[in-house]
Image 1 (cartoon, helix red, strand yellow):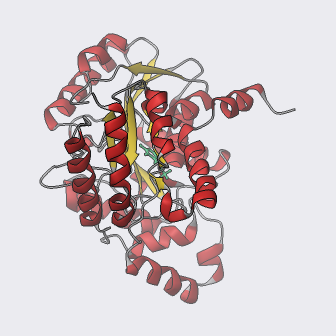
Image 2: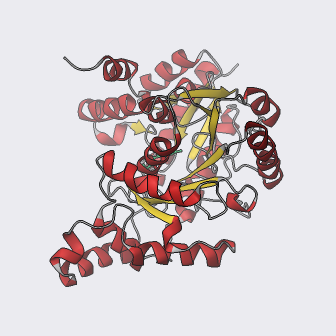
Length: 394
Ligand code: PLP
């Protein structure tokens, strides 16, 4: 018999994954070119050429144990040093290799950090709309998610509401900017204020409230927008990074945690993250991908392709009468439903348009459209979005 916990998770399901599966089914019935699947944040821009070349070169030239063997749970020291140096030169930080723990993507990093800090019954504050998997990650370690309500139309975090939700059990706050699902980048003043509140509240509590910054979209930024680096504003910040989106490598499962010396209990926390990596069964992040990152530290994805998609879709949908905030980063459009959410998602599906309801992100009445797809698919989908608007927008 499977456990009650996993049964509950299976029953509540992932609407995103369910839509993705539905997309595959519809493609078999109607043909791939007649299905407009905007459900999953699966990057369509190819990984940089240098990444594929590095994979081949490393596989051909590296000694078996050095490439395929067990290693420190936190990862290769040389790789961690390369990442620390790169962060220092970009953000003026002072990371050494010991401040970096290699992880199995952002999801692996979040699970490792939560395992390292959460005691049964501890609370983790999140800002809606948020990546729904946080619920599972926090529940896995016996914690409780406390949700700050959404703050439309800007979707900047509502700090007053957050402050009112801090309790004696608050152990961490998770933020994600550029944000999935809104595409919003949290402003520098807001983040400074967030740091100030958390410092006050930590002092009041007599123990650090950690700020976990979930950053898989850090480099996916449009125009002149800047993503502030959070350790500048708050010492107890844990940065969780991933190459899934920034180098189009979601299946390769590679990322890292960066924890500054200034964080409370830093050395113990870093050691705990190493242990958590081991006992969660990751043991270490994939060795080949670690070495690829070391060689490709300065590689970048082609953000201009996502930008082109963003402009096409945003301009068309707003012209048809839909309301949504213009994304500043990531590759999602968060559109207000002109009719009740589940009816809108179902209506879109009648045109073979697959999108995910805001309920999955604790923000009912919206849908998320992932535009990390081909430009061509967006162009082909537009007549159907137009029909959807004619059916639903008053
Ligand atoms: N956090 C957010 C906000 C995400 O959108 C995702 C993936 O879509 C993840 C974490 C997980 O990323 P990874 O594939 O690196 O585990």
